[in-house]
Length: 611
Image 1 (cartoon, rainbow, N blue to C red):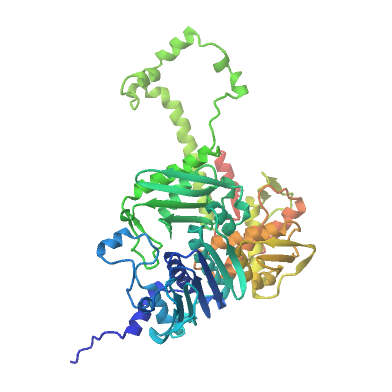
Image 2: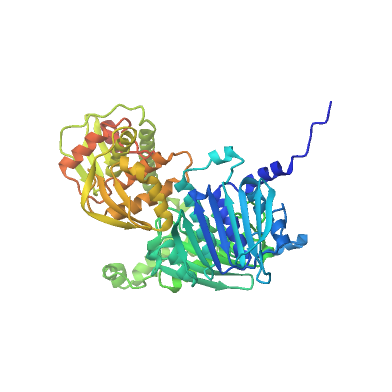
């Protein structure tokens, strides 16, 4: 048998390695921006064409490279930052493994122009498929310009897996924001297809945050600044009212490197406990500085996941720093030690505790048990009779609650199998401006008005997306919508689908849109806010990969346009909603699986009352 194991050719080995580092255009953007930062640049420009598929170019005014260095930079594992194995544990720069440029050269056509300030001329190098095709001296500005063209031109299968231009552009914007956020002292710009999306002048961290995340944060940021011998933490957290339903505006940096850490997210969320809703996420931009030897940043190809030597110390310190910042700015709730006036008039407070009452209380066996040393957990068996009536009451209530809970679960589990209830032609009753109470031939229904309307709208939008578009109601006074650059990119991606669902939205300059029309059955007024909430809801679904873009949009619209708790409904509106619900193909649950109604049968009601 001949030998069958062979070494891969270099260009194929490089393409395989590139798959780990360069997964999409945004991956290359990240690597090139980090290299520019490491080069000591104070001015960095990012130029994108065709969402990075045609061109990704980064121009910086950093130290530049000599002719030899420019050629060596594209060899695998060539780096200026590691000379001994111990250097791996003292990494303070962004790129250090020497994989990025070699990976880029394996999957794109690369052109490099670079010049050191001490050199009279620069160097031009062109590389294709990991092979240098041109190298010559050239007139160039101090610094480096790297342009990568036709990404994945030699790996068409990889190119086919790329998403739409708008989706890829969102990923590029995310990477740009993460790098530029960490270096407010550097000028950054991002230009896409000839239009400048970001122009970030040098300034303070707070100014950079507002530039990137929007003016709504200008007066709603709280400074965090704690220093110890072990580590420092600084940055800003958003006041509780800035909390959102998505994790969008959450940034953690360790030694100025953006990281993803569910563990540290939990630490910050814990500091906000009871100040924001349980399903909301606080906004923050936090920087942790600590000895590089306490961190392993070489655990993932993208270097966004790291390991701390002592995670528990970091967790406790982060949570403590955020709590301290909130307390310092009088945001945390304070205890009110003044008694309620109504309590002051109770007999137990206003009247003296007489000697006779004191004697009766102290002679109680329960009092004696709990005042004996080390006996707080004991109750004498002979004294249990005093607790008998309490026990009977608790057990009785528990069994009732348990049976109700069981009935509720059984109703939910049988939703898909039960027959549609016959609703009596009587008036409906609205409870707490949230529920609709309806009488049936066998008992009663308790309908959740928002969940019911969400199901109705979901099926309506689903059929509209598959067939005839929903009618649009033109606005007499079109409203203008100003978005952050990343949200503007997202809205552009959704415009066609939104038009099919009744929205008429047109671009109106940089990051600005005009809402010309809305679905005919949607109340007029505050359309801009509705679109902002829609985008927020859409991003909430983006982490769930099993949903298509259209499905996410339909679910988002149904949730945003549904009748919210607190709205008073007329008899006509309640009847219409109930009729629409039971005309749905699946009336018993929302698209997310929450019940739209509960049914209590007459025999169950009688049983609850002991009849």
